[in-house]
Each structure stands twice: as structure tokens, then as C-alpha cells.
Length: 279
Image (cartoon, rainbow, N blue to C red; front, side, top):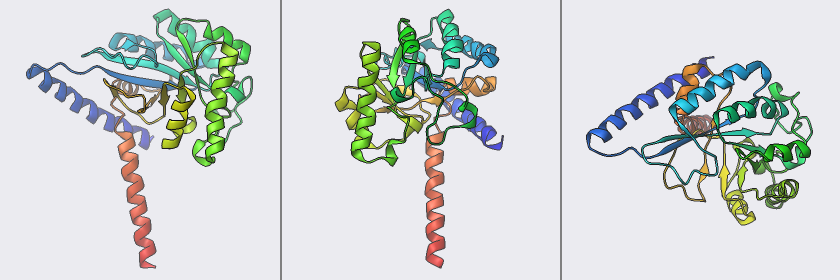
């Protein structure tokens, strides 16, 4: 709870700075750039359907919904939002997609091709999703028929690429694309790194394989002029988010977290080095 409240307070500070910056820009006759926040969900089950629906109501009220593969077309002065799902659990597909269709909100589902029809068994699986089931290949085909849904890759076995050698990581990235395209009979252009873990070689490998965009899990707010080599950050969302919490996430106010984590790691390393030096 303390960590959650700290993130919330930090988000409020960023939101306030953004508001003041916007006022200054307008007073100088400058138009604010187009922005976009990419949300990612894991579980959206029937129990939390009403809360998810309220979040999507707020999204369409405050943002222009776009697909995650349309980030290069941000309108100046407009706040955009894209909705994505990692893992493709049956509960999320059955509960969330109907709510998105009602509101005409596009969605991207990132799938691990080697996990279709299975319970999540990958390393570090959270207790909350242990009993979930990934959609089957047949279910995925039906989902892909919707004009609002696009399918992306989440690698083949939902493994941490950083823990693999180069050949293994390349196979995870490439074979998932090949397998998903064979199932869907359509091009798979987007890739989300499992656990948000990657290095520069994985980006090069993804682009060589034919992916057009790659995504991670570091909170970010996107502005105009994204290059294909940019890794696009996403903001973790959950139907149980507090209303204020979700609204701050939707406005990009949680983008301070990667910098805070980086500073924390640097301080830990410095303290550890200092202790070793005194021994």
C-alpha cells in the first residue's frame, strides 16, 4: 500500500507539472504536441467487468482511442490512448473485448505462440494468473476476425530473453512470428518483450525478423516522431486501479517511475560498493 500511494503521489506531481507546462505553452501561442499512453492489462474477468467498463468510459471521454500500430499518426494537441493485453487469457478475451467493441476501442493482444490453450507455466508467473487459461489457436482465429483487434507476438514460450543466449533469443522472437502468422494467415507486426526484458540485440533481431514496433513494460508517454528503433513503453493497468490512479496513468503521469527505479538501483550499487570497500 505504501508503494502504491508513493506512485500515486509522484503521478500527481507529474500531472501538475504537465498542467503548468501546457498553460505556459498556450500562453506563448504554442500548440501542445500529440501524445499517447499505451495501457497493458493481464486479467479482466467477469468479476471486475463493471470496473473495466468504467475505465473505458473515462478513456473515450478524455482520449482518442487508437490502435497500438498507429502510433506514428498522433494528432497535434490531442491526447491518444491505446489498449493492449499481454498473454491472451480467455477471461480477458471474453470479458474485455465486448466492452471495447461497444465503445469502438481498438485493442492489441500479445500472444506467446507456444502457450496457446495452456495454463501459464512460465518462470515467475504471478499467483493471480496461475489458474488462467490462454486462448487456443481456434479461439485466436475468431478473435482476429474483429476489425478492432490486432494480434502481436509475446515471443514463443514467454521466457526472459535476457537469460538466454543469442541463438535462443533469436528463435523465441522469430519462431513466434512464424507460428502466429501460420495460424492467423496474416502479418504479425508488433512484438512485446516478456517481462519487459530486452537488450539492444533483441531490438535488432526483432526488426530483422519483420516486426515494425517493439514494446516493453516501462511506463511512458509517447509523443510525435517515434522511430522504428524506439522501444515503446506501456503503463500497467488493472480494473482494480483506483479511479484517480487510473486517470493519472491514462495521462502519462506514471512515466517518472523508470527514472526512479534507475536512481534506486544506482544508489543500491553505490552503497554495496562502499560496504565492500570498507571490508
